[in-house]
Image 1: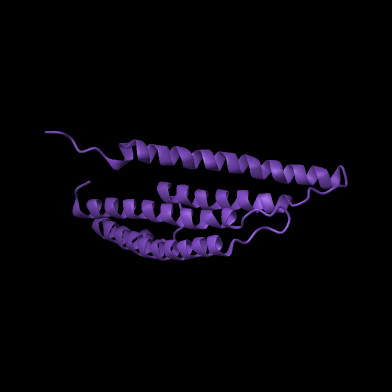
Image 2 (image 1 turned 180 degrees about the vertical axis):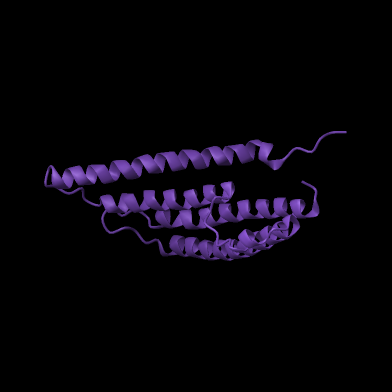
Length: 169
């Protein structure tokens, strides 16, 4: 009998993680370079880089939201998880984890919907930044894409929690 292949073994899953790591690496480096360049220009050369904040906002939004996505993948996001400290029964902990993940999925779905509406609104409005005239949707889009990917990972973890609760894992 053929063994079922896990979604985590798929090239799509691995490619998505690789893309996230590249975005995190590139945006981290860019953010540092932009800030260092801005500081050097301001305090050493007594000059200012016109509109550098517009670029930094784009970089920071992508860094922040893809970082949130990666935290969702790793399950290292911040949680208010006080009950699990006091619960000693392993079955009860599994049920609690499932309920927490379920609630997180619902919230993430709502935020994804709002992110979608904001993304579409940004496209329809066609607003541009004041200095460089960069479409604002470029800095708004990581909100939508970030929440969608977070929802994807939360649903994955919900399925895993359900299987653990049922004793399949």
